[in-house]
Length: 270
Ligand code: KIV
Ligand code: NA
Image 1 (cartoon, rainbow, N blue to C red):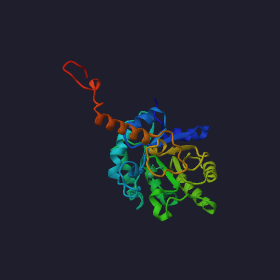
Image 2: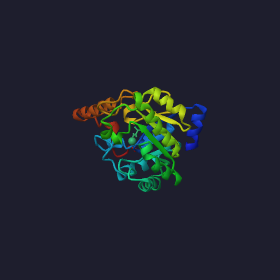
Image 3: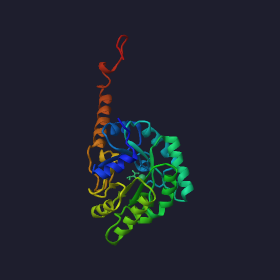
Image 4: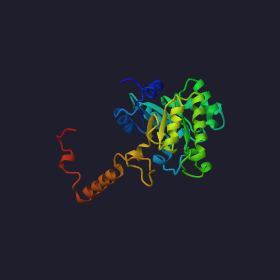
């Protein structure tokens, strides 16, 4: 299998072929999603919620994401792996942003980095791209600024649409190879997708983007608590695992597990 490269993103947009992405934070899911033909895996700072037990992405550090990103990058044969730059690791300016991106590239084997913000992050994106590191942008709702934005609020409604377009254009002009559009109206995403030459990747931005991305624990029904409206749940892993754990406990309590099939004697093989 040939690796997905950033040029394949450009070609997909030109040819009207949809791009698919899922988050991943570990080797087991990375292998499965790679085998499924998912084009890119994002080691998101959503790991704060899905792996690390925080209630937002704000506390997540580079040191926490590096081992997760490395596990994913070492586990794929085809998918392009994107390392998410956490809150506090790039906002101060282009030199910090480049240092952070360098750490991800040198220590994790990831193929690209992602950072949030349009116009406000353009100099950072440009500096990283100039160093030969592909950047995926992220505009619309940007979870690292949830307090500045006043909560988990849909962006780009009404007269705000032009501001999201301007952010996406700034990301493109700075040299990014793709841009995530998070939680904006479908029609605004359609406008932005038509205006840009780089592919747009929707997370809750409707069907007109060039690609779709979901947090894997949401799409597979493993996340507990409220899941946003835009998520389609393709499995119910939380229920499956709950039942499995309950059945294991019941079997052990009742003496049904382990039986002879799951025990060794002097002669049995492994
Ligand atoms: O961290 C993440 O999973 C993300 C996507 C939801 C865009 O940034
Ligand atoms: Na993120």
